Image (cartoon, rainbow over all chains, first blue to last red; front, side):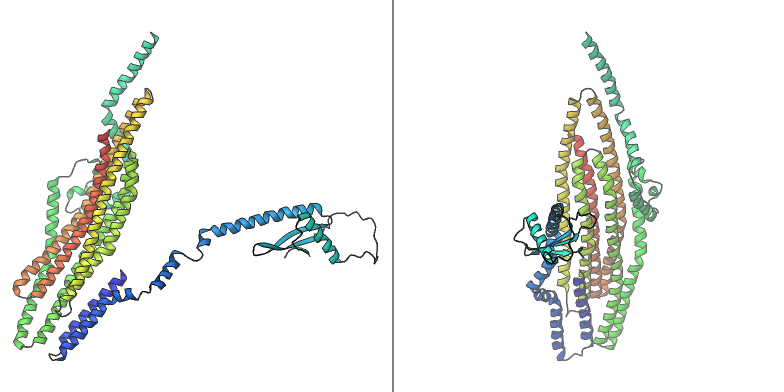
Length: 185
Length: 390
C-alpha cells in the first residue's frame, strides 16, 4: 500500500510541475518538444512499478522467500534433531552408569568416578576412565616389602593391569582404554 | 387390582402437572428470560448505546430515556413517526451547516469569472492561465478538505460498526448456543468474526484509500489537457469497486447457505434429543422435556431481543453518517450544476467528480452497514428455523 501511495504521489507532483512548466513556457517552436519530453518522463514514472517488477531477479527473491519460509535450522526448530541428540545423550548416560557400577563392584582398591567415551564418526574410539585409589577402606595387608627390586611394579604396569581387567569386565577387547588418575576436570 | 390403583395414581400425578406446564409456559419463559438477562454482560453494547444517545439524543427524544435492557425487552416500541421526524430534523440541520460550503464554492466561482473577465481586458492569455491555475488550486483545496472529512468520517463509522459487531457477537452467539443451536453457534462464531474483521480491514486499508487515490488523480488531471491520468484513476476506482462486490457476494453466500445447513441440522438434533428423552426416560422424561422446552423458548426470545437491539444500534450508528455524506455529495453536485451556466467548465467538472467519489464512499459505507445488518438478521432468522422444525 505504501508503495502505491508513494507512486501516485510522484505522479501527482509531476503533473503539477508539468502544468507549471507549461504555464511558464513561451509560445514558440520548442514548446512542443518540451511537452513531448515531459510526456515521456511521465510515461517513465507510470511504468515504474512494471519496471521494478521486471527488475526482481526471480532467483534472488526465491532465495529470500526460502530464507523466510524454510529457515536453515528448520530441523532444530522443528525439534526432531534436538530430540534425537537428547535421546542419544540419555542412552550414553545410562550405559555409563551401568558400566561404572559393574566395574566398581568387581574392582578392589580403586574407584571409578567417571567415564568418557571418545567418538569418531559414530564409532567408539577410546574409553577414558577417571579413577582413584580407594582410601576410605581398610585394606588387609599381608606383607610389607620395602625396596624389593624384583617385583617392582611401576605406575604404568599397574595401569595396564587395570586396563586389562576393565576390558575383561566390560567385554570390550578391541577398544583401547586410557586410565587417568584423579577426578575429571 | 394393585396394578390398576398404581396406574390411576400415576395418571393423577402426571395429568395436572401437564396442564400446569401448558398454562404457565409463557409466564415461566418470561421469568427465565428476565433471569437470563440479568446474567449476561451487556456493558460493551451499552457503551455504544450511550455514545449514540450522547451524539444524536437531540434528534431522538425517545432515545434518551431508554435503557439497553428496555431495548432488548422491547418495552414500549419505537414510534416510526418520531423516528422519521428526528431524521428529518437531522437532515435539515446538516444542510444548514453544510450550506456555508456551497456559498464558499459559488463565491469562488463568481470571483474566478470576474478575474477572467478583467484579464481578458488585458488581452494576455498566459496571465489568465495563471489566474485560472490559482483559482483551481483553491477550489481543489476546499473540495479535498471536505472529501478528506467525509473519508475519515466513513472510515471511523466503518471501524465503529466493526467494533460493535465484535462486542455484540459473543453475547448473541452464547444465547444462540443456550437456545440449543450448538452447531449454528459453532459455525457462525469463527466465520462471522473473521468476515467482519476482514471487511473492516479491506474497507479501511484498501478500498477507501484506492478511491481517495482515484479522486486525487482525476482532480489533478483536470488541471491541463496535456498530462492526463484519468485512466489510472478509473483503474483504481474499478479495482476498489471490484473488491467490494466480490467480498459482498462471498459474505452473503457463505452466511446464508452454510448457516441454513447448520440450523437445519441443529433443529433435527434438538428434535431427536427431545424425542429420546421423553420416550426412553419414563414419567420424568416428559416433564423434563417440557422444562427444557420452556428454557429454550426463553433463551430464544432473549436472543431475538438482543439481536433486534443490535440491529437498531447498528442502524443508528450508520444512518447519521450516511445522511451527512449524502448531503455533502448533493451540495457538491448542486454547486456543479449552479456553476456550469457561469461558463467555467473545469470547475464544474471538478465539483462533479468530487461529488461522484463521495457517492462512492457513501456506497461503501452503505454496503458495509448492509452486510453487518444482514449478518445479524440472518443469525436471528436462521436460528428461529429449528423452532418450526420441532
